[in-house]
Length: 407
Image (cartoon, rainbow, N blue to C red; front, side, top):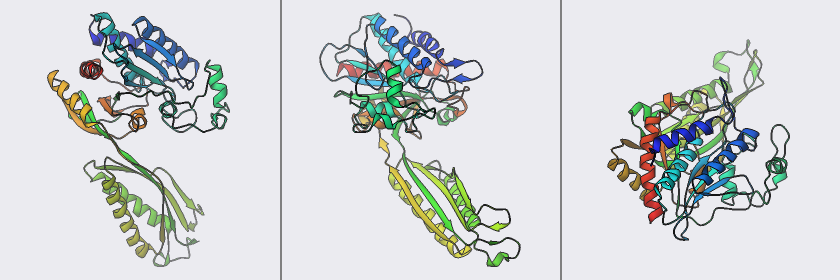
């Protein structure tokens, strides 16, 4: 049997050519020609390695290693699409490593007790319609009842047209996730925790929760020259003080949470008028709901103090609340056990980004493995993970998939 890392390297190099342009990175948007050509390549490779392949109505590609029994399958995989001018590893790694494992099994004549289904999801990045993880949502039946024609790309293409041009038939929102044993996803970290720790493997404890807010500060617009500083009700000055507090508290939280203000609007937005209103966004991410509860409470307390100091009013509007998703403890323990047996150093850490595992984790026991991203870079042509790190992680994943498919 060929070395697993060598099998993966050849497969990954071939797949990486689809949508890649020198100096521009990889652009492989869902249902585009590069995407469909990459999908065709994976289909051909998988069939040659003894896997059974099918596409659902959405365009997700399912590649199955047949099992000796009809037991529910072990699912694994990740997304085939990329952001515009993105990297080679994001998503593709979680497809090619399991497929290389399946090819190695085929060479060795190994057949699992229960099937192993590798999924190459379409439209995880949200580049075509906005919402992320639509392929896994469709597969899990979370888009049932929606009108396909209401999904239109920025170029004006409706979803039904994209699917028809891709040769897809049937209801794109019909669920295709059969009862399964579990779902496992390997992914690049998209951060630098592993690189900073000089470790080749991360075992994900949870996908963090997210809360989004719009915070409006109401003050009083007035003449910028004739209004004394002590008489001002400056909404922007108060907002700036709150934003600074948000940043400083998150910075000193010892990575318990992250907080981001990514948008701000000022009214009347004139150089010679004291701002009468300011509005800004706030996103908070943390592994525990209790952490976010405490953070929001502290931020609101600070804003009440600012109300007195600046003579303004803070209005908080929470847009949504996505709870954290803990990973399955049993599979995490398998990862830890086999990493130790393979002498692969690792750490337990949360995922600060969302993934397809975030969707399937509500349907099946789910776990994730991370490999390092050089300099923490992702969604960029500079995205890179060494073959040595991938090889070590692949050896752990192979042992765990063998274990799970034998149960």
